[in-house]
Amino acid sequence: MTTTANAPTTPQASTSATIAVVGAGGKMGMRVSNNLVKTDHRVFYVENSPAGQQRTREAGRDLTDAATAVAQADIVVLAVPDLALGAVTADLVPQMKSGGIVLTLDPAAAYAGLLTTRDDVVQAVAHPCHPSVFLQRTTPEEYADTFGGIAAPQDAIAAVESDDPAVAAIVEATVRAIYAPVVDVHFVTIKQLAQLEPTLVETVACMIGALLKEALDEAVDTMGVPAAAARSMLLGHTQVALANGLRGDNPFSDACLIAMDYGRESIIKDDWKKIFRDDELDKNLARMLHLDSIDRGER
Image (cartoon, rainbow, N blue to C red; front, side, top):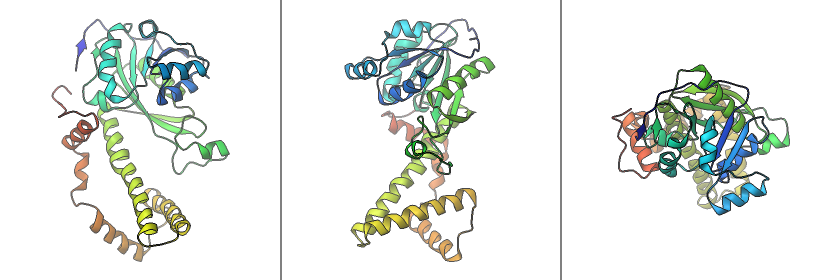
């Protein structure tokens, strides 16, 4: 972790802030910018790539050079890929004003210690929860918004390396703006956020989602079940499985429990919970960040 030290100062909480979005023309940058433009925040849009600059201008937004934007920003939102965050923070963090906040949108690089930091610049991370599978949607727009940030309400997770309530207030206001509409913002540590993403939701939940698709393909392509019948059966039973397993809506039948045991014995390794260990988290993140290893000595 690269660090430059200066005397710390505390930002003042307010109803609006000056926000710089770095990577404003990228996929996530466009999402957060589309929401920020609806707020009272003063927003600078920063984008280096020609294609991203064109998308930003076509959206009716003015571009600002990075040095000007980050020097004035209360909070700098880094909407750039994890693999670029080391170089981006090395360039921009030294140019930020004292008391500023740098917000990344994924915990991997922050947890791995790849970001340049300053004693007087607060490091924060935020990530959307995405709309719950159990969300009561009422409009076509909410039904269509499976990712969140458009119409369907969602929660968000934030981690802030500061005990100052004013800092947390600015981060929460920004998180609520970029991921709107937001119901709750849950605060955790950076390590806990890394344990949630990737371990809980990508290593487990997303893997299971992909496994369900593989199983559906197997039922159709290998067993010869009509695709419409197999898909209907799987989608309906997936909802029942989640409702029963996660909410306890109804007990699984005795026969189902036997089949579930067979599935666990056939598919799941006995030691699968090792993925929640610190050393396994480090190995997972090292693979994601294309590193040989992660040095946890400074954390």
